[in-house]
Amino acid sequence: MGTLLNRSPQVFNVILESAAKLPEVQVVLSVGEDIGIDNLPPIPSNAIVVERAPQLELLKHTQLCLTHAGLNTALEALAQGVPMVAIPVGFDQPGVAARIAHHGVGDFVGVDERLTVESVTGLIRKVMGNPTYRQRANDLKEVIARANGLDLAANLVEKAYRTAHGGAL
Image (cartoon, rainbow, N blue to C red; front, side, top):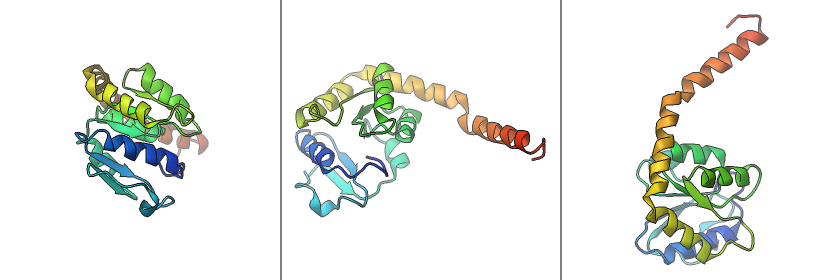
């Protein structure tokens, strides 16, 4: 659930209870350092809970990313063609979650009265059960790969530096 807004035990509790209702799904939950794994409810047998997880490596082997809708996580999931279920917590996350849904690469539920075990479990089943979400995520994976973002970003930084420093690099 990110590095800044991962202090909500309610969200982690709902995720773990949802995992228990989906025994056919292997869940890896990264909770950060603030909550403490010992403070969580019983961990179902199909869940692995850690403070930190190698997100990029996990995304290469996953069917779904359950995310707080942070922009970095969303882009990393899309770069691997992974659809998402988002639980936006704050800042720009509601907007990112809305875009996830708008582009058909996942769905979302807000951290409010709608965040329940049933809503999260239902969205996980919905997104995993409909191949259109994965196809749309794969379509955006191709777009991201073609954009060559690292080279584009490096060129923009070099251009800005040259502009600020009279053309010298």
